[in-house]
Image 1: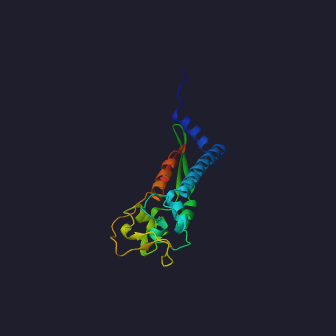
Image 2: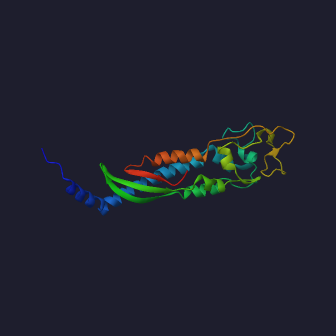
Image 3: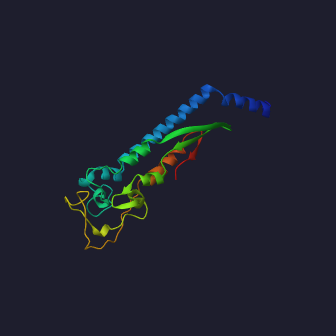
Length: 207
């Protein structure tokens, strides 16, 4: 039966491996490739999300998110006609990147620590101002407590409407809120997929 390697020999082998440029570059490329695949799926999920599609559809969009009894989120929230409410959010999420921080030799090989630079929810909320309430975020309200005054919302194509497709009826009760899972859930799924990257650990820079 062969004798086990002593600690000094193990340390010497590990040092040679951890400084092997070919092995380092190969592992780095593997991690970066996995990240790009995961990030591409994340962006595809964002682009195809019912809320994204509905808001980008503007005043004439159907209620793809099934969040309202009539009309659509673009008109209900009150965005100005011709605007793209999710453009800034999309640009921020697209810039998400990975930075490999350090490496060490574990019992089963290389263990990489990396940092994913992604906009925080605070950043995304700042990029999604409520059209009619200064200092408030439509994204935070939509995913949190819900956007109020559902009872006063009327879907009506009107030139006097900011969005061109929604008016507020002051004679009706303002009860009811609209709440939909959106970006926060997508970020959580993104993080779960990142944790599946082989031979690595996640250092989160968001949430």
